[in-house]
Length: 165
Image 1 (cartoon, rainbow, N blue to C red):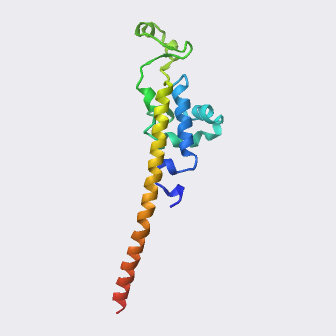
Image 2 (cartoon, rainbow, N blue to C red):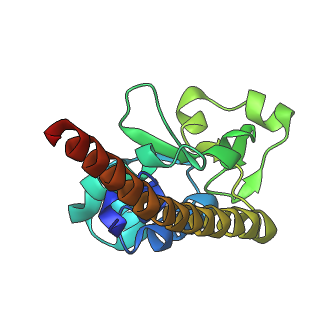
């Protein structure tokens, strides 16, 4: 079974784990927690040409990423847990009182708090562990398929031999 034939999204391409880790790092620390695929592609890979690839990665890894209701914007699941009180311009979390006095247009500059280094490290470790498990499962499936196909061949051969007699 080649890497492309696996059911695990971690094994769909040779650089999938690297892409997931890169997305976690950028999406965890960037001021705004939710952007469309093209904006994330530019932030993560430096090119808007990778938009389709990043959309695929976000949708195939719901353990880390969530799409909005339109399916056009992505965010990091962990960051969605935080309140929307992070002032992107001031780079600090606002108090409830500070947030409540903002005008509607000022609230557009409010996001969710970026993750801390240890939180990003936990997510990266989780991605590595999930990738490792996918590789182990893939090896196990290949190990089981050889004996099963051999047994199926023996049974089929015996059946055909019986039918010919």
